[in-house]
Image (tube, rainbow, N blue to C red; front, side, top):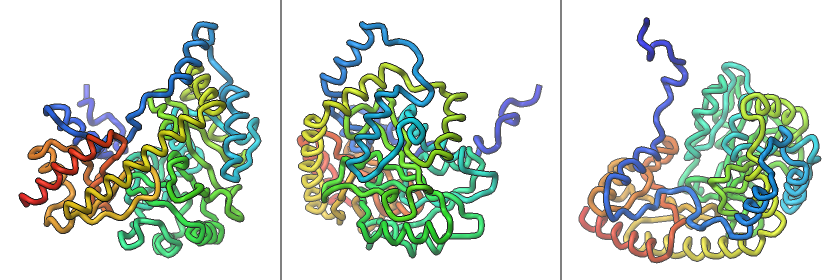
Length: 387
């Protein structure tokens, strides 16, 4: 029998391991580590949401649902999205998925033919490149610039377009930089997308975590609704990462293709999670707002702290990440993160885990308590001073 490794998919074999996971593994072997690396809320899912799931189990809701999702949940998602000036038919233009990650995966598989290019503004969430490659596409990095706080511009996008460009995958508010696009940014990008007939996957999982005002979606721009799939979910704003409930919203033709993949690969999202999501959307506004206010307080705390120990840091306008500039230390992002972890027991993620444009920066999550943030900043200050 041939060596098993030689019989595996060369595409899968070529994928690098997650740069985030390596630092989690290192941190797990050490004591007294403060983690600023985790990209999930530190809050427990609010009690009334958990209680709704318990009640559903007691009443025997343990079956499959419709492939698309529970009709009442689809209706609530449609109603919720109107708050962002997005209007979708719940019976034809929405799909409940296993987290936002599945939505991104099936959207790419539905859109791409082999060899077509996927434009990915970087620094970017770590799954976009692998998912594009697994769907047969060719990932193309679109570097964003520190002097623009890593906001994607129409000019950035134009410089990377070729005759093979088909899909733009964008995430704003952004992971890892905390960047948010302005109305003028969105208008410029929309014109480029329409002019070059690009399809768009807009990952808006952090939409509720926008600190400078209401979140705006590119799908609401003129000419964009029928070429954009909006991806979101319950994980970040409602502290429901482990429930794995996401959704996609978009034009019927694309959503129908996504549904085909979803029904064969997944069948449906778990009913207990869907029942919990229904409760969150119907009655979770107060708890959600309380969590957002706390993130906002921590955001200001960590930015002030990082600047105070000599690390320049633009003020993140969304999500729950700060992205300080460590170039003045003379270290690479990887060396800085590893040295900080080993010497001061603080876990951050090197910016290069999110693409080459992240070199010279590290991601610090402030989804942890204010006391832990203060202690982490003290330790970072000692590390920088010793350098």
